[in-house]
Length: 433
Image 1 (cartoon, rainbow, N blue to C red):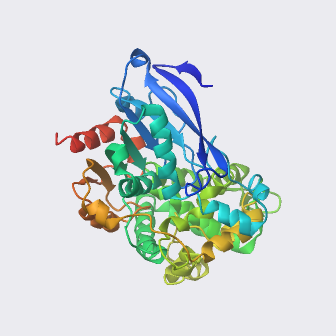
Image 2 (cartoon, helix red, strand yellow):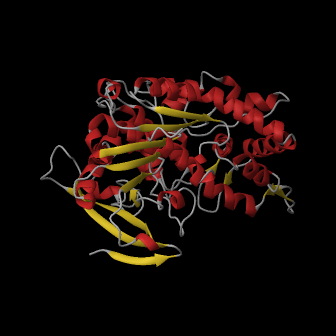
């Protein structure tokens, strides 16, 4: 039974769907998906085309909008929108340290999580689409990892799509995780340098915090053990439109005087634990590198191994000199599972996923080369999270795909740019630009 209710300017309906855990075994075990239907109040009774939104991540539920925020305002002018919590996220059957032990031990948990990649998400969408649209194709809007899923959608079930819109989410079709991170670390270095150029005072502040962490054991209020590598990973903020400013404000209030000497302030620790904890999105840490697995090669903690090829990211070496502390982001490491209490029980499960050698392809280059679905993609210049060169190479490999390359926004442009970004992509799919 669906529940409907109102917010300013919209009617919302909670929708739930039952799908197979393994789409190769449709009569087997099932899981539940949750999605929120959104329609403009003045169009609630109209027969409108559908747009399904695929959130970034992996591991995040669909954004919880209030009213007609961001891009949703533009979409509601012509679409009925479905905000889907992808399997394992949000209000869909959860996968976390509390629920995964129901599967059994680490081996059973790892086997279960192999069903939480883009191919399964796309097949979920197809079952949901047939139920909500009566079989009519719909438009998909894929943000970041949602864009990865959209490329898989175009590979597996293009007949389900009227159009495809991608924001900051054109992946390489054939890069191994090692290739992804070899391209990522230089971007992290550039983003860090740009931040310090904007806020030169943060060079000394970041060094002071790192020196403190090398000399002291710091456990955050939630039990997260904050080491210098974890502090460096706050560079993930630099991929967002306001991220550099948020990082600056965080660093400027790091220390307070105490009877025992300077210490990291409660306010600093509180904000840092919210930024670093995976309690709300553990799938991000568990399956992040597997989104790049497409053959018999294990991902094998790629971000950690590749980081060793860039010695400038070694904090102790950086602090031995007088230069700035490099920051990182968009990487998951073995120590992530040791430090975060939300992940510690899942460390062995993560190790098994990192060692897997039976990943299947997520994209069909031949089918993409023959694509007939209108596709438009926003590619953000020097995107921290998705390599621009990889994105543009993929764009050339998808027949008819039109790109909008811009440095006006960072990776979160679909939220920061709101209606304007969506309007531009829709226009590109309709040959209006």
